[in-house]
Length: 222
Ligand code: SAM
Image (cartoon, rainbow, N blue to C red; front, side):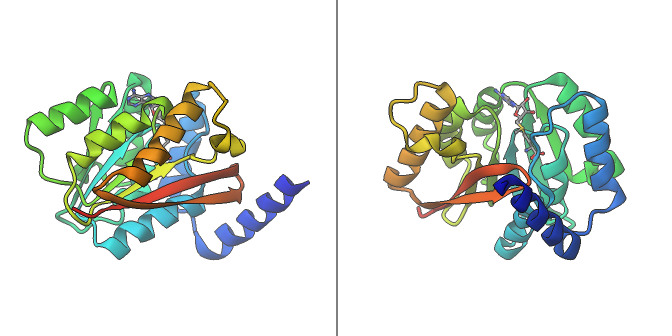
């Protein structure tokens, strides 16, 4: 099957390019043991985020959707010593598991996990006058993606990079008749990225161990 081939190629790429260390492996093992869904980014996607943050020289990173902190570890490891990451998570159990995983990975001192609904946390960051983020990774509840994009823009500066995960939705993103709120939200997200005067964006379909999916990438122009 195609999935078997995608798995084999992802395994090969990960073996050759993405050595896992004990902290990353333990983060996934403890997330699974705690009953968290395995909807974290794949290792080679985590490394992609890490490389993107380093290429961009990101010092302040915002993540929406922490889960067990797997992508958080990849992103936090891209930060300089004086950099910081804010990650937003609704489920208290996920916050708890992520906190332990981040501590074991040695990045807890650079990461602030804000519990609660991400839209509320983003509004609080705006109200508190938080300095702009250099990179934003949007990976939470997909129906809210347009809301997260608008709020993230208020925490951005020209040059801020915004990544949105899981935008292909098994191809259903191209189906305007699909009423699934995740599809509707993803379509609004893509259309907002395309039409927003402050953004220049693209989206890429992907295959791999996590199946068929894709991500959107944007830069804040002004
Ligand atoms: N970024 C993680 C990774 O790759 O390791 C995976 C995140 S998972 C796909 C999505 C997360 O968003 C879940 O942990 C879920 O509980 C959280 N979430 C869902 N709705 C949310 C909301 N309204 N506010 C904040 N987090 C939310």
